[in-house]
Image (cartoon, rainbow, N blue to C red; front, side, top):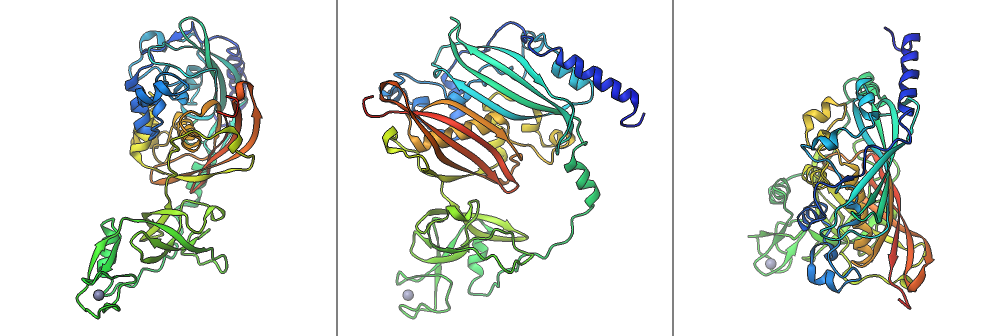
Amino acid sequence: MSEGSAEDAAEKVALLESLRGDVGKVMGAPLPARDEVNQAMIRHWSDAMEDFNPCYIDADFAAKSIHGEIVAPPAMLNAWGMAGLHPPASYRNRGVETYAKLDAAGYTSVVATNSEHDYARYLKLGETVHGAGRVTDVSEEKATALGTGHFVTTVTDYTTESGEVVGSMTFRILKFKPGTGRMAASADEAGPAKPRPTRPKPGISRDTKFFWDGIAQGELRIQSCECGALHHPPMVRCPKCGAYDLGWMVASGRGKVYSHVEPVHPKIPSFDYPLIVGLIELEEGTRLLSNVVDVEEEFVEIGMDVELSIQECNGVELPVFRPVRPARRETTLRFEDVEVGDRLAPCPIPITPTLIVSTAIASRDYQDVHHDRDLAIKRGSPDIFMNILTSSGLSSRYVTDWAGPEAVLKNLRIRLGVPNYPYDTMTMYGEVSDKGQVASGRGVVTLKVRGTNRMGHHLTGTIDLELPGDGA
Ligand SMILES: [Zn+2]
């Protein structure tokens, strides 16, 4: 039967009708989470996300904070109710068969596209979260870059045992047929990738070999002399004392941008653009000509703290530098100290397989595409990829690291674009887009955030954050 036959079309109409019949239905009775809010799961999340807000993990600090005790990271909201790896039967039969119907019709792959959390308050240790979900929308069949499929939107309300509402989540996923996307089609048509000239290799001499050997081993070496002088680039003879017998030391890899420039024309095919050339002043005092990566040029500033990242740049292993992760604020920003237009320092997050897998498991998401490369490839993805709970968790971490431990998230709304695959870097950017005073002196600021990787925007979103203020 050919694609687009009359029978085919009739089947699709029937499927959509059946799917839309599920809209508004509650997915079974409100389900209690398998475990109460507990420190072990919070710690696992905190470790995996590298979110070390002491309100989540330090009982003494939390006791003196506005929360008065340990609270769960707000972005964990739906982690508590996740079914886990071997869900009990009560989790498997939830009354609404929307996803099962799509699976049966061949839409077996899944990707989350939107997550909107609203937080009435933070959860505390020992509480049991109950979640009640319902399907609110099923789209017509759409042809997307990933594949042909339906978007399914659900809303889940979260309550405590006593029925108090603690938050809600609007969640949208795409259920699609693997291998039907434009990305898959264009890869097939393009055939083998066109050869591209590799970046010119560095000239390696007897005097500079130690430097490039170091790079191959993951370290940055600086030529040193017994008189104490350090030189870069390496020299034949110490310009200070005249010695010929020179050694080297391993640099920390940290430094500052001394100056930078962005060559734009003419573009050379062997280089990736935009290309930022930076003169880096290392902590040890020597300067090194390199590239500044994982950050947009307009955010590069003289004096910016950077760290070494050894990257394969179009066929050549090179020492390059990326901005360091901004330090976590120990004291919370005050509402009156924040202005609309304030920018958060960019935060590069290396996307390692460990990050993707550990955060997926910490959020109790056992979808194989987040931890099993072979199965991810079978489902039409080039590799494992980050799950949406982690994109939310990292967004939360980014804004609270900036605002301080007692900033309180009111909501977190993100939309996903290109996936985060291993060995890429996602750089988070943020800006204060609005301010609104609330009662008791506390105020809410709205932040626009985005996370960008080498392919484009991984996430875009907004977060409302409550800060202490005068009169609080
Ligand atoms: Zn010397």
